[in-house]
Image (tube, rainbow, N blue to C red):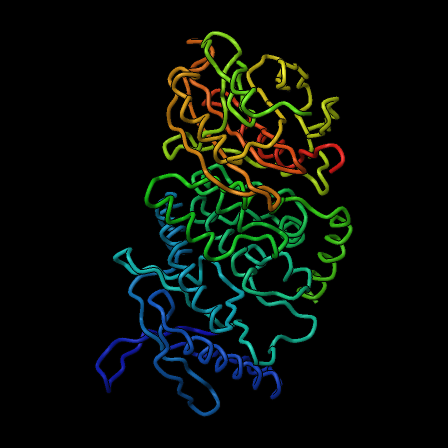
Length: 494
């Protein structure tokens, strides 16, 4: 759309960047006019914004009918140049870049400006490595301005474009946030997670294929997964993403947000999405190419896993403890490629729906078998490495948070080596809930330490608890089993 020149402002004695609109001589007069209008539109869009992470526009000048945008000169290169030259950046640097871009997007969206082409090539990084600047609002959309996009054409970079835009649906601020999610993946791996060998492959990956965040994005997984939510209404917002990234920068870990996760089955697709994806891809390619147990009673029961009140885990060399989810800032982070629960609680690939005689259903991995232990129900892997636990009881007067904190208080007694624990008040499906995570010494010295994720919530006059525990070296699978179990758990009659 243009060439950017390094220039000198002779009046003020400073170096500037000047973006020249390059016009194809074969363009019709109407098309040339539209190109000039787009350049002016870019300038107006950026001129509305004042933020250290947004490029500064000084002026717009015209030479004949050719417009030039005079902008501040950033001494450095684009993020794309940096990735090509030096390779991927680490998660801390990606988080820093992400926070800068969130700040820019917050200001832009508040002013009614959508960027619509957020990608590494449009992110400048000063040579000092400090300042990150969002630039190239050339296809920005401004509230109150008519679109300059020709009917049937598409503008943007498909690898970083939100599925709703590709599908021809109305785009909003959430579309820029999807692009940020793809950019964060690119920052830590060097390329978009949707890069494929063909345009059709890219479109399929964005619209309908299973989303597999790269393992390098593991430290930022809650943010990446939340941003790469295909349903814009469920996508992570600016404030949520900012909070999670700031927590990572401050602590080295990203909080696991059960409320956000369970409220948005992030990577699930509507049942008719596959057919729709094929239609969208074809159209776009053409356009572009042309039961009554009290919680208190459960406190007295031994055995791994939670329950609305934590059972006791007193035997490190055998089952029987309160292994439940603990959310420690120093606990190992899962390196999981998440397969989300399907719509309506259906089972994702690799799982089956277990209809339990105790009055609930949930998805468990193939090969897992049911092993009841008193009021607690376990579904365990053939080698007993992974344990999915479920309890249900009468509500506790203090709610899920009180139950989990009592369990946390007795954790050192119930779980040898209890450590890295946390309890987080949250919601599950709009209902009060509490998440607990912790690490402990495990059932045997040979196996080593274990880690547990546990969610407790109230629903329909009952209190439910679902947890998953596994060796600390197998958290990728454990996290996937936990997310799936929680996301597909349905009490009878619900």
